[in-house]
Length: 190
Image (cartoon, rainbow, N blue to C red; front, side):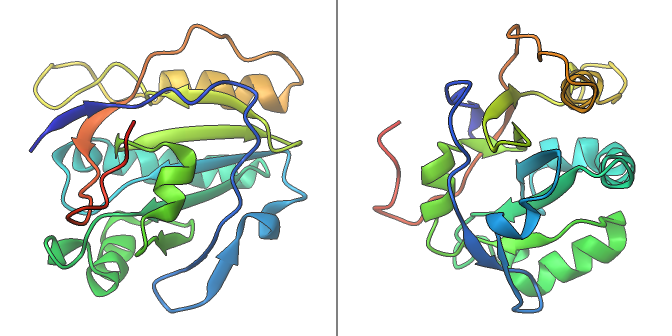
């Protein structure tokens, strides 16, 4: 497991478009969420201990976000040939086991991860109602083994700021987790 920080895509970046299948094969696009006041894009996977560490709180808080009108999508960009536990079939199992209420999408070409400059799992990108990046970074200070509780505090603060029309603090800490499992020869330059 290579530990990798997020790349901290520049704030204000327009959300890169995507059209990806969910675990049933239904195509989901960025523009399916055009009316949302905010959109959270999470690069994640099934096997990463950093994602497993936040799994319960992630399911709970994203359900609350959705109740507030925030669009949420999870994207798995890992190479499923080398990491079959991240296959669409296993993703379906993870949705049920974790209680995720958001679409969990398959980025088999890894092009969407590259467009977002995603580097780790989990990697969080929050966009405002104009699809401009207002937050990228950690969910909170908790990490496997550091004894800090999983609260989602950093992500909650950003979402609440967007929903109340306030600026999101530019003091943002990178997310840390497992590196995205790139297909051989497909590793990005960042």
